[in-house]
Amino acid sequence: IMYCTWVYPVTLYPPFFGYYFFNGLLLILLCLHIFWAALIIRLAFRFLSSN
Figure 1 (cartoon, rainbow, N blue to C red):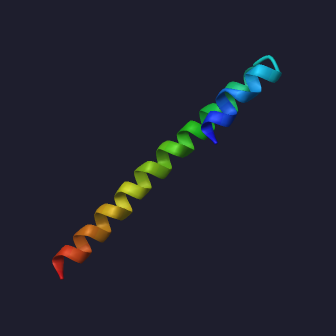
Figure 2: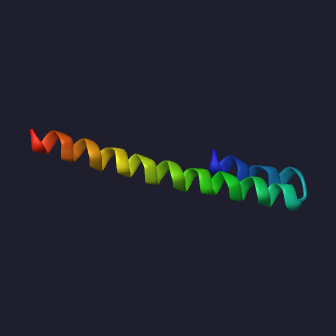
């Protein structure tokens, strides 16, 4: 989805503030998803290796 929002709209419309704001928020959301996934995987690994 990041590729679709960064590359494709620029070919159709000129970029404006909302474009950069929206993509910035999507990038932050992607980073948070990666962070939370890493935390959950690490927690599951610790739980499974302790038993």
